Structure formats: structure tokens, C-alpha cells
Image 1: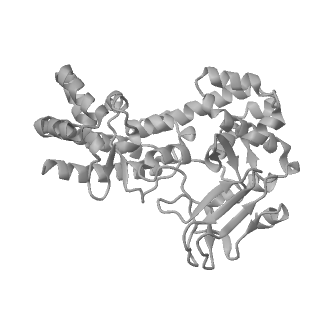
Image 2 (image 1 turned 120 degrees about the vertical axis):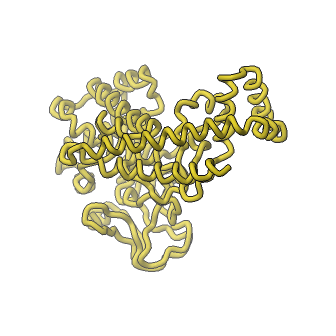
Image 3 (image 1 turned 60 degrees about the vertical axis):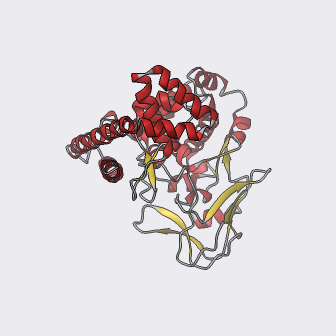
Length: 382
């Protein structure tokens, strides 16, 4: 890989190299001290794969396929689809593709939601299952749309190759101002809750990776793949569990409507793993959920205090109806803990030869369980 990259003009800082602990997962690390602000890697635009370049290359040939995605409500996924199609084209060229060496170095097996089965989804908490299933449905829509594009039947009929290309496009690319980019070699930086590097692109499409802090010899250089406070989206999209994540979504999928009405997102409703702390927005959603069921008038009044930003009035609601909020939260936490045991027991009954993602699923459920046990301990003594 290093020789191939250098022959195409990829430059990297002295001491930066690809490292592996197991011979399978390679990542960027440095063998020399690197000061903050150093450009640790440069990937020229003619090596970069981008949805923008793919659109120019295909011209109008993807029009029917993209229209089908739009009708399926996946307009925002079109840049990813273009990259997916570009990867399939280069795969079809075999050794004649300029990117053959890079493509040949990529993993063949992924643990993303797109690669999971319905048996996997049955062993996950609803939020993680929903995210993972969404990725699988996105892939199915890409698969259908690809049939409307100029591509050989040999490739279009090979679900394994299609799924591989989807996973490559999804896990190796970053969103840059609405377009998707993959910089070979620049895609070897692992995710970190705490990061040492940042990827950017200039107006010509060249990729630069800069050190954002002083990095000492022997250290990895990590970038952010997404929200570090909530590991479930990373789990579904990238197929790994970030155990360093400090929190996770509190799993109140049955309160999703109330969450959205109050203007909150999944990233706002957090349970903290080590401390068992609960983000304030969780209490807001829980109380709003309770009041909507018992007294719509009170619920509307509470809603108005949140929308107006009247913290004093909101606090009065929480103080007056705290017992109801607490009971609802305890019911949710206790029920989820029971369900986690059932889901993990089910996963443990699967054959690893046919369900190789079981260890990851169990690790995810253990992470959630540990978090919920700490939250339960706090709630029970409040």
C-alpha cells in the first residue's frame, strides 16, 4: 500500500505508518513525535474518489437510478450512491483499475447494519436495531437502484459484491459540504472519542490530514467518525463498538414522538456510562410523555415552558411531578435491563459460524447494560 500510495503522489509525515495489532485491522500511528498543526498526510485529488467526480464521470447515466432513490425518500443518499457506483466500476476493471491495490487491501467482511441479518436485529435494543435495519434498507434500495444504471449483470447479480461496495463507500468516506469523499490512505485513520487528527479537503479536492494536538511517538492518530457521546450510530454504520464513549442514547424509543415535539434529538437524551447520570432532556421528555397520557392540558403547559425557555417554570413542573417522572424512568430502566438479558441470551444461542457478528452484539448489549445498571442505582436512591 505504501509503495502504491507514494507512486500516486501521496505524501506523509516522517514516522507516520500503518500499524496493526492483529494483522487484520491496520491504522495510522506515528513512530516519531509530531507537533500540533503538522500536515501528516496529503492525498492529491486525482487519487481521491468523490461523489462529485463520479457524477461528472457518469454524466446522466445514473439519472433513472437516482430518481428511484429520490422517490424512496433517499435524496440525501445520492452522493453516497454515486460513490458506491464508482467503486463497483473500478472493481469491475480488476487489475487495470488505478485503485486496484487499494481496493484489494480493504476488508471483505463487515459488521455494519447493512451486513446484519434479521436474527441480529432481534438481539439488539430497539434503537440500535432501528439504526442497523435502516442501513440494511438503504443497501437494499441501492441494490434496486443499481439495476437502472449501466453495470454488468455479473456484478449486479452478485449480492456479496454489491454489499461489499456499499460498505466500502459507507465506512471509508466522509461527508464534505454535502459530497462524499474517500482518500485512499487517508481512510486508514481510526475513530477516537479523543482525536489527534482532522481530515479536510481544499477547493481542488486534495485531501490533507492535520495533527490537532502534539502526538508522541508510539501513538495512534485518530479522527472523529461521528458523535463520540453515543456509540449506537457508529455501531450501525461502521460496525464497531466505541467502548470509550462516555454515554449512550437512553433507549426511550417509545417516547420518540415526544422527543421530536420538544425539539430534541437522540444525541440529547443520554445516559452516562460510568456515573449513571441522566441528561436533563431525558427528564423533560419523560415528564412530557407522562403528562400527555394523564392530563393533556398540563402537558401543553409544560410544552410551552420548554418552548419559551422558561427554566424557572419548567423546574416547578419537575419538582411538582417528580415522582411520576421517576416511576416512569424506573419502569423503563428495569424493563430494558430484563430485555437486555433476553436479547443476549438469544444471541448466545446462535452458531458463530452462521452468525459471526454475535460477539459484537453481545459487547454492545453489555455496554448498554452496564450503563443502565449505573442509572438504575442512581434512580433507586433519588
